[in-house]
Length: 427
Image 1 (cartoon, one colour):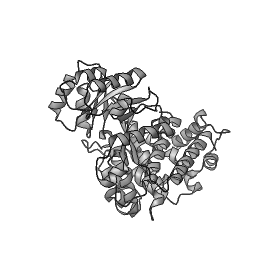
Image 2 (cartoon, rainbow, N blue to C red):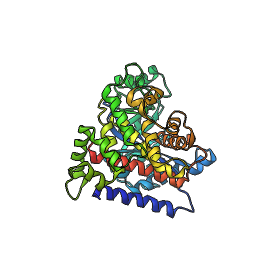
Image 3 (tube, rainbow, N blue to C red):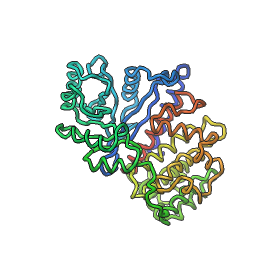
Image 4 (tube, helix red, strand yellow):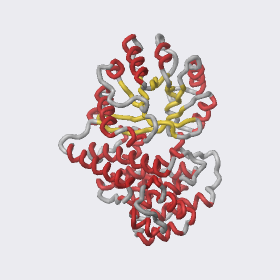
């Protein structure tokens, strides 16, 4: 087994031991990550979203300080690399972290400290922001909706200002963007949910963008997907047939000469650390095992959609992995079918078609199709959980679900898995 996958196995075992050690007391927090993109829709950072499980169960906002404290402690325990690779992580903090009452146990340089809109920029808070900035942390102002009395000193210290675009129309967004021009901070447009708003904000000079506009299909054109794109989707469907054995996978991959060549080259690269060079598909399948080869081949295939932002492909793979990890908690949701449900639930954005059209010609079982289209059955519940985590929409979590410990670990592992896979394949 290569060093890469030994490292992943070690991480899996660490997570499992965490669940075992917490069997009598659930973790007090759920964590998700949301991508932040640059003007070219490339990954620039992740924001880490958290929610206290006590607050979730009680349907209350909860104590933000306690939530932030557990999240920051978790980052110190597991390491940022597992969750965000070599990208910066945006993390909300409360006044206790700004003033130094609570220490920041994570290193500066990799963390962007988000100052919540609820924090008043009094002398104590400003001194705390200046202190963190002096230590090397970047400072972001969260949910900015326009000038406020006494806010200018905080804007002077900020490296990034996040403008809440969901709360405003285009004219108001333009006004706020204009008001920030005297300051050196980069402008981040957050809560961008459609491509039109993304393009409008980019024209206004915003540098960074956060929201799920990139994961929405572009239905402005009714043209059918190209033959290459359609063949790619059919190949993905065949790769993830639940009953496909080693011989089947070898034949499926071998039909695509470009995929075969790329797979051999990638797995023989230094990044994967194989003990010896492999030259045939059979060797690869035996050496790494069908599940690993299937996952790598899937991301290589998705990478051919070069007109789509890479964050979309990584999000689809992470969603699929999350569904796969959660399948063991559902009676009829096998791991291969759960992975397929998660992966193909993003086909509308990949093909720029309504999801019903995207699935129409694929040989999918009825339960897989119903899970994607209607969130029906055990597979549908697994997908609902994965989507809720993806968006940090904790209220959308179904009432019948795995334990908080299992959800947390599945979330952390799926994020770490796709980050590691992307790193090895070369972003």
